[in-house]
Amino acid sequence: MFSSRRKASQLPWGDSRSFLPRKYSVFQLFFACLFLAFLSLLWLQLSCSGDMNQSGQGQDLISSPKACPVEPPISPEEDASWGTHRLAVLVPFRERFEELLVFVPHMHHFLNKKKIRHHIYVLNQVDHFRFNRASLINVGFLESGNSTDYLAMHDVDLLPLNEELDYSFPEAGPFHVASPELHPLYHYKTYVGGILLLTKQHYQLCNGMSNRFWGWGREDDEFYRRIKGAGLQLFRPSGIKTGYKTFRHLHDPAWRKRDQKRIASQKQEQFKLDREGGLNSVRYHLDSRTLVSVAGAPCTVLNIALDCDAADTPWCTFD
Image (tube, rainbow, N blue to C red; front, side, top):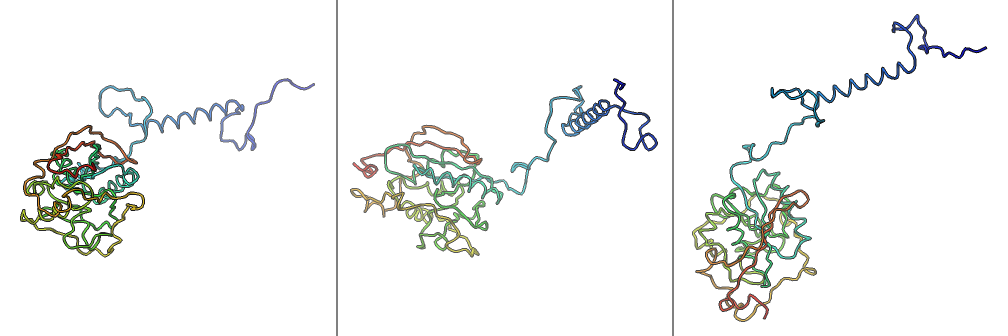
């Protein structure tokens, strides 16, 4: 009664309005769509993969899939607007990892925005002596090598917020970024701590910093006298309108107690100018040098074991 043969599928508007020359079955239309989709994907593949054999080396037109080409970012080495100088950011450090995790990515992005070629060196003191910021900076100077031509003595708990702050090459003389008019805590005229930029030539002229300062404080006050003794002029920022909000200070005194104890004759000795020691007399062993990334920001961690002459500076330990 009924025909067992299926009728060919027709478009709804019939043959008279069809732009197709003949009738198509559902399966024929389905495979035609698949074929068109395949051709579309193939075209996208060829147009995005860059496999048009421009090199003329006889490569096949179709190779492994690749992402569509994008314009690569211009690296500092290729962009003349970054200048020719390179900054070594020297960060004296011991056990303040929560601050370091904030500092490294902040400084890396801050300096990149200003187009300052740089590398961050975390100077990690791993010995059992009291903390010696000045000696660590001396070691950082020596270990940063010739790939950098100026340095920033930079506290790990002090973050610049104002992009108008100058981190460029301080050719005229030492440049105190964290000046007394801007630092959130220290406001006396001879203060040169926090963040100080020097050319490596000027740092050598000062014979670096004194190695006699174990514990917290006073080493930057002595370095101010070295700067003046070397005949260098100290420069500071001008035109900065953000005042004491120019920097973010991460240090929590309730959580991180400073080692301000004065042992034996240390109280008297700390006010004297060290005329002999410095960069030429720092004693240390470099345990390791490791390149790491903190939230995508590269830095080099130097594990430094300082040495102490207990006969000269018996206050290097608490014993």
